[in-house]
Amino acid sequence: MTQFIKDYVSSCQQCSRNKNIHHKRFGLLKPLPMPNGPWICLSMDFITQLSLSNSFDSILVIVNRFLKMSVFIPTISSITSLDLAHLFIKNIFSKHGLPLRIVSDRRPLFVSSFWTNLCQKLKISRDLSTAYHPETDGQTKRVNQILEQYVWIYQLLFFTVYGRDPQFDSAHITQDTPVGKVSEKFQSVQHNVKRELEVSINRFKRYADKIRASPPVFNPGDMVWLSSKNIKSTRPTKKLSERWLGPFPILKKVSTHAYHLKLPSQ
Image (cartoon, rainbow, N blue to C red):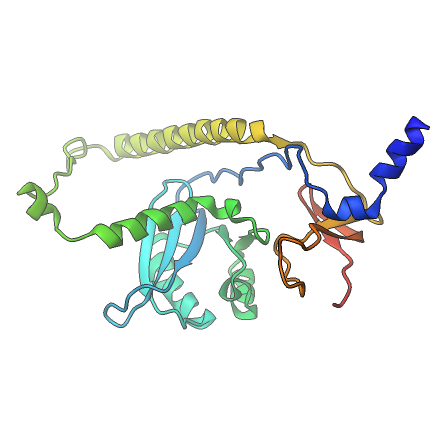
């Protein structure tokens, strides 16, 4: 009788549709692959709905994932995929060459046929974030926050605040420095940067996984529930809507954290 009750409760559709989840969030953190050098892997995003300045109301943010160096390009909110290509060629390709990977969200510009075909022709791999999962490109989101804060509070130049120009130390590289030593020092710096990035990523993953659990394994054909969190409902209030929809069959396993479901047309 006990087993029958457990099976009945676990298979009750009304309970499955509406009950809250109290276990740890499924899916351990999956950091993006570490780039081997600068300007090999970039992340891109837009800051929009800014006050009009010199005919611009948006900023294209491009971050070098290895050095964390950021490029801020003024643009407009009505930018097209062709305009995006021109900005990329003018501000990135002309100065740093072509990257191997670009991380971005799924906004229409980044999934347009023109941008997709351009990346394919240039042999640039696109890493698009999963829907409603901004953590994929959290680095650029954080840079956006810093830039927005800077734009908001920026009023004075460096000289006005400190009464002097910023000092840049270039004494360690002189005209008499042998090329070999400069190259060796450059490679050593990149090696140290990569090592510190790996340590930082591993530390971040360790803390993030404390509140996560390993995802369950599903196979094509399995029936699963779909969260209604980001799905619009015709009900008058979201609070009383069903928390889970389905169950729906799995068509394909995209990754350990994502599956392609067979959904109804409406």
